[in-house]
Length: 228
Picture 1 (cartoon, helix red, strand yellow):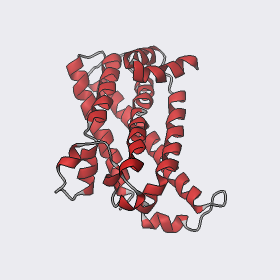
Picture 2 (tube, one colour; picture 1 turned 30 degrees about the horizontal axis):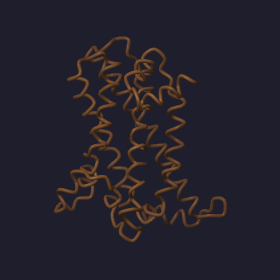
Picture 3 (cartoon, one colour; picture 1 turned 180 degrees about the vertical axis):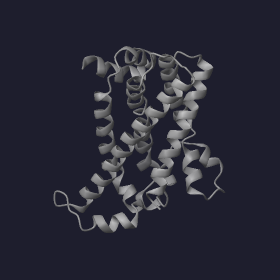
Picture 4 (spheres, helix red, strand yellow; picture 1 turned 45 degrees about the horizontal axis):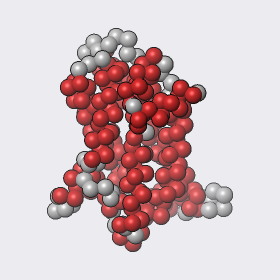
């Protein structure tokens, strides 16, 4: 247990140490628990901003449901559970695909599904951390009345702010991930790939960018799609 918590600390302070340990002991339980906790907390924090984006079809269903005497609580649970389910599905599917890819390209035969799965739950924690940073600035620059689209919730300066003429919400939300913190995400993924797959930094970085783009694509479809 102590080692699992140390992995989370080193994820920020020394990511290479985290993935080196995961290479020999692929533990993911604590990381998964922290992910679920962060998703629930974030769902509660951003609910005043996101409740207007809940798909009307789901909103009508939730209107008749009360949890702990509150429809609001039921709505937040809906958002949180949806986030956790999406996280689990992505973890399983991406880990299987990456395991198959590593076999096809004969990358480090010692690398197995359990290593990739454990690394996935650690690297994915960067996403809610970045979201927390973004949300911390949201009340400073936006009020609930100012939020008209999901993209309006992205406060950290990104490429989307340079192409305001674009109206496609999917594209804008996707571009909003291309910022300084997005580079941090890619850096951690690069360290993970280099440590586990034992490939050059160039190949690790290229692989990390591809994985990151796929993650952002899935998140964009979920976030924007659920609000339309």
